[in-house]
Image (cartoon, rainbow, N blue to C red):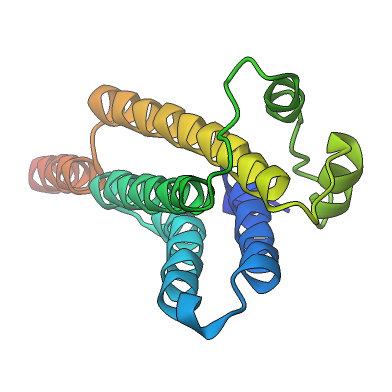
Length: 183
């Protein structure tokens, strides 16, 4: 497995996408939440898919833009989970809460097909409780957004250092013309 599939940021995005589907099926199945469910699904899907699309781009600028779109989608999804808790009078766990610390230290695997089983056993959280499930998602989304910010900075640094696709292509064309005209 190579390319985007081996990226930690992508693997975590897959986990977030899969867990989001489980969340809304469990806690938002009433028809009055139909629009919220659609929004959450699209935000989770967009976050994941834009990582894929960006990694397949030849253009560094387009790749960086799609990482930004992914970050924005996951930011939107994060707000949906916060809204869910706030609307029901449930607490958002503090960053120093032991459950948050445990979730933050979870390490996503880039070699296993899915991490859902590992995560649910590892956290020891009761996922039948909406407070636990939504707060887990908030933790995972904060982690994903941090990773996307790191990826964005790395891509920007690489762009500044090595240039973009068009710039490098133009340079190769210029070198080719110089060699052709001198021969």
